Image (spheres, rainbow, N blue to C red):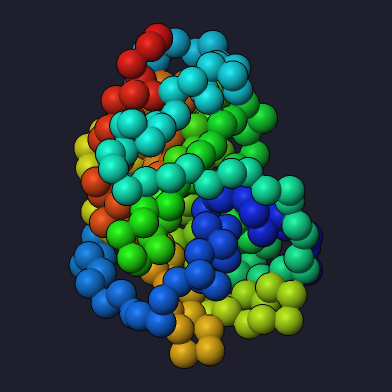
Amino acid sequence: MRVRVATTAVGITAVVLLTLPACPDTTDTGRPAPSSSARSGSPAATEQSDTPLSSAALAARLLDESDLGSGYTRKPERPAQHDDVTVLGCPALADLGDDAATGGQLDFPRQAKATFLYSDGSNSEVSEELYSDTAETLSVGSRKIFDAMVGCPHYPVLVGGTAFDMTTQEVAVPQLGTEQWSQLLTYSAAGRETVVKQTAVRDGNMLLVVSGSPALVDRHLDKALTRAAAVR
């Protein structure tokens, strides 16, 4: 399936398309062991609030440099640049449509995001996305997308004229919020490999997605959820 996606979007897999060209020629082999319980939790019988938050309200709940500590700078938003992307061999992703199939932003209209560069010499990035909708809509939509992602553990992706080999692997997830998902996404091309971790936590009517360097995701996930849920 050939689709058009914004390669500047940071979503399920788009973060890898962003970081791969800037990453050093190193391979991350310290991957957590697979876990059959990577997705856990179920919708709560009674949610704290089912009224969706506005995009402006979500933006106010994002982490900033002062939350992350020294060494972080926020990347400015750039105009979207569209490349032809072809996802091969994964019907489940193809059925989800353009953005979901190629890792664009999740299909929830109320959203906010920020991406930070950690300047420790590794050129590592960490991104945070917040979405809001009714609890049921977030739960059903997120589960469908993440199930499709891990349902295709290996498939090729063509971005413009560049071929990438992609693998997905479920990993253990912290018991946070109402529902949780976590996975490793690995893109390899021309002998180079980039591993990105993505962890998503639904807390009532809000969905938090933190993606990037596995170490940075683990370091800042709890902090991001605490700030996002601080005001109700």
